[in-house]
Length: 441
Ligand code: LLP
View 1 (cartoon, protein in one colour):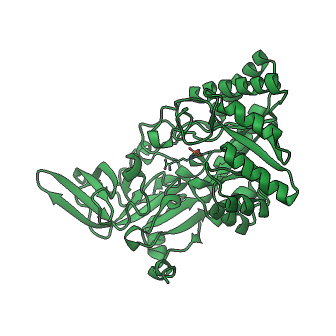
View 2 (cartoon, helix red, strand yellow):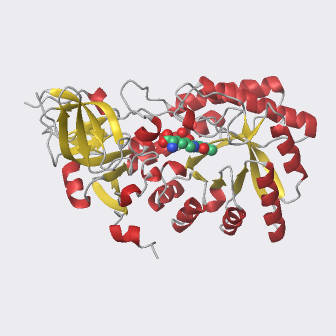
View 3 (cartoon, rainbow, N blue to C red):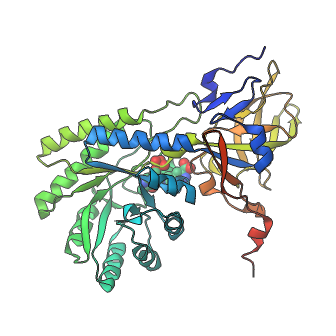
């Protein structure tokens, strides 16, 4: 009799176990997928992505009564299929580079619904985005604003623009993803007067149509009060710009950042609850400031795709160094997921087979790059009889993994496979060594 693993360890309801106790994802067995597509492999539960997108859209609809919209922050996972899904679900997108714009365009995404971010858009980026008809530019700084004005003027168009504002908020997340503090490289700070100056500048430029303000205070945020403080600061800024310049912002974009559950001691945030709390607070703030409620937009990335993803690896070796450590080496590593190496990000890593009754030992799951820091996760409890050729699954692996993959050590990047309705479809084929060498002249 196989004891089914405590559901809690499986983190998310699209991860389960079959009758033999083997792990499943989106209702599908993992061994046949590994056999067909090879490992390492990224799997995406397409229905989960759609579910998350719908949750955001209905939450915005309920909380803001039609005066809200959602853009998927496509830096979290960018490939054609994701943009097709976003288009089908009526989502907007946030793009940050020519590569993301081009991928979205190739997927047939209606780019009028795209918001172009980044703290340093080159002249070529600006021209490229205008060529492709990107609807909204989120301008980061004065130089960029002038460059947008010049290109728009040259084309005889008026470009819709939001200004990225730094509210001076510490989102209490890890440093690399905290962006709302005054000393951030992103945006113009209210505290230093730079936000007001860039607003005045935007209003003076004839080919810039200022639609409102944007902020994004950070990522992997669990504390909803961060958004409550942010909206207050931003709406106060809206009121001040109205008072001082007679300019009433029509749109306020509060960015993304909702936290997701990578390990069982992290909470699973409820999207609707969080957005409703923000909406309630915004209504109160607007009433006390005497301004109308602007159109509100959100830009979630991680919370759309993270738990829709799983990474599959094959074990190569289990190296026990008596008195020290056990290393489980897999056929991927920091090249397909640099997040532990960069941020020490926690993950749930499980063997696909059940290993009922086996002794457990603490391991470091490491990759195959020539680098000691090539670690996928430390302190992982693994069955002591784990052996070469077995599959390991990393849960909640859909955000900032494929997107941040590299070819370090000239390792080809894994394939991406979409799972839906019991079927598997290749979305991105596995790179080959020929792909890698093809750029060398
Ligand atoms: N909007 C803007 C302007 C952003 O910069 C970001 C993320 C988002 C929205 C989406 O945030 P999300 O909902 O995904 O938290 N590589 C890091 C994450 C970097 C986040 C960059 N900006 C990681 O792997 O944790």
